Length: 250
Image (cartoon, rainbow, N blue to C red; front, side, top):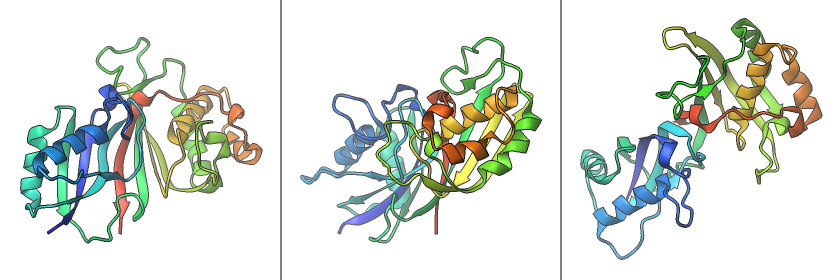
């Protein structure tokens, strides 16, 4: 009897060419499907379905995928079996059996991303794959003043990378925060919304850092919503600082 499983994944994106399968590339989807099909020993190839894609170098603390498996295995057994075959930079942290109509991508109602910025003057060799880096002066109070402009329903056309295939750029941000981690000399952003466009979080972070540096007015987001011009945002924060933290379902 076929059973549908929902698993939550954590992975270090450094050595992955993103989440989605690509020819001749090591991706999260390809290593997970390889482990699953080795477990199933079944003729029909098992394909996984993720809540969304992450780019090369982007990390996940709570990526969610679903798949249909041809044998009944207890969730704890599935978790242990997969983790025994997955590489060390990818781990199943939770596993559940779900109803046949559950879909990791189409039944989600929100995602939470975190972005870590290292504030050291030089690039920390132990953080270079896990943070962005901003050595310039930064007034975090200016960023905090700007964040309410991020929250709400807006047209984020100025904040979407040119490679996006999505035509509708309206998204709703429920929560946007920033905090200083002085012990680790980092600034940490979090964004919770109903969905995000290609590179949207990384472009928003780069724009907020420019506000914090005084290169932009505090309320520049309001102008950027109106102009709907990607060229007005210029910078994109590095993939290394971005984490898919949580995916929300009913």
